[in-house]
Length: 271
Image (cartoon, rainbow, N blue to C red; front, side):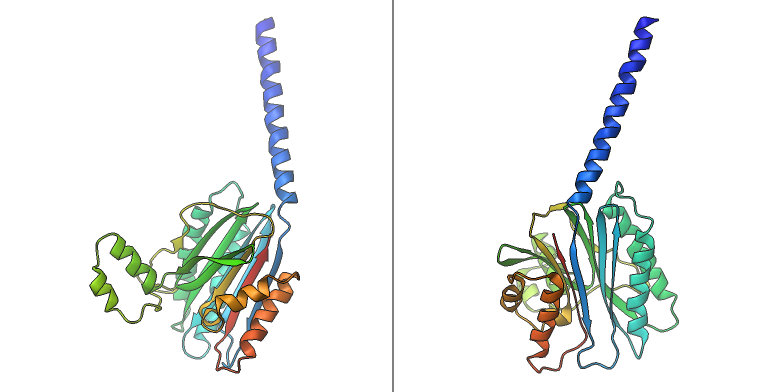
């Protein structure tokens, strides 16, 4: 009888200890997850803004999505906005104990279906970042550039699903010769997008990426990437000001070149 009583007491103590530990972890995670976030869109020299973004915070983590739409008239704009709304709505149901991979699997497929259901034939490229504490996972459909700014250097994580990356993969697997690869001219063309009949999954980061204090995440549309050099961005990002000021200065640097720019879109997240 006494053995059973003590066994119950021990079980209760262990369960209580586990509960306290989980609470402490969540509190610590919440304290370390005050993100400085800014997203900027600029219409450039185009009549219609076809870029869109969404940012959601949830239980000490956050999700950020950036899209660039393409299509006649307003079709690209609608495709981009539909994609963003799908992401933000589904993230409301996200559980921080859930793997970001399963979120990406569901949300990109649903976004593809939602865009296909729009009468106009629009499409969108999309990049999504999910942060749980200081742990990063990302997924990209089409052309979207994601960097980490650490110290004074921009470190490229991915250019997304473009021909250059597909060629590298096929060459490394022996499925394409280097000679044949060199004959492919349009290496910057995206080979995937949201809103296609034959759905292709996104490019998902293979491993969790641990971020450090003072790191910054930078996500850019193709138009921004093509309009400013990495060095020019580094000169802006190294300044001791807010992400809001950094993001707007990058756009102003591009506009100051007096070039025929397309829609511009970027998100900066400071740890």
